[in-house]
Length: 322
Image (cartoon, rainbow, N blue to C red; front, side, top):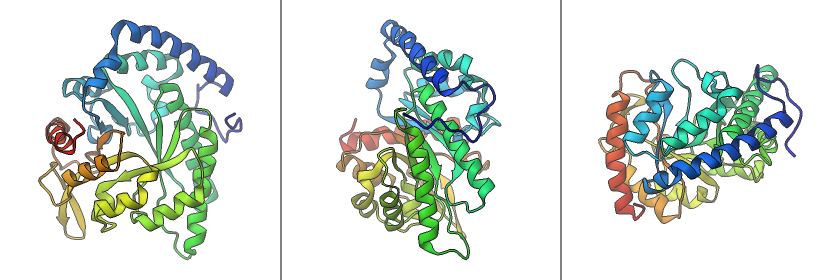
């Protein structure tokens, strides 16, 4: 049974028992709808490509669904919609609208693969840590209602003046807490290779400390290459047993940072990352994370998403995944 305790509940979100009854009833109705429209057959015919809504911060919910379907994406990752980063506050995901939202996603031949929370597990401040765990729990509950398999959280940073073990133990404890909440919900909490934690030995250490069947890994293959300075094959050899979802993107050096460019136009070996994933038996979605929300100067989403879909289909064919 999932933990009944809550630090807080989102306004209007149903209780645990009400939520489970609601989702069970909704799922039965959606199953009947699927038998009429057969959207899953559409999704199955599409290549396993998805994109994050981080890349289209001005698009409405309907624009997101319409573009994804028109460009033959099979799934979407939700990381904020328009001006709201807390998905539990969006009207499309209010309890009374969940059934209609799931139907709209299915009717577009799509799936929701992941919800991106902003929660940081390294936080030593008690109030910030409590807020992060509360956000994680709310996103897990929403993922359960939407039928989304993953909720992403961050590590995220080394804490100044603190030992390595102390920080990693706190991160692992936070992951276990959220993993416990996700038990029985068909949701896995996934840690992203991000921030200070982009090298495989550190990530592997965290996974082993967390030691939870409902905690796994989101491999941001850009970050392990560009900031962790790892070859994709070296990363995969160490981390693939934990990898459930991936982020892919391309960039070039820009001073002390990186500048994002269209896929294949930079120095990140994205094609080789596809090949490595396929060779290691990865069966998830190849998710494009175009960071337009944080970098408004980069290409517009309708350009970057469509270009990614074209080259990614080629990469998948060459990797034997098409």
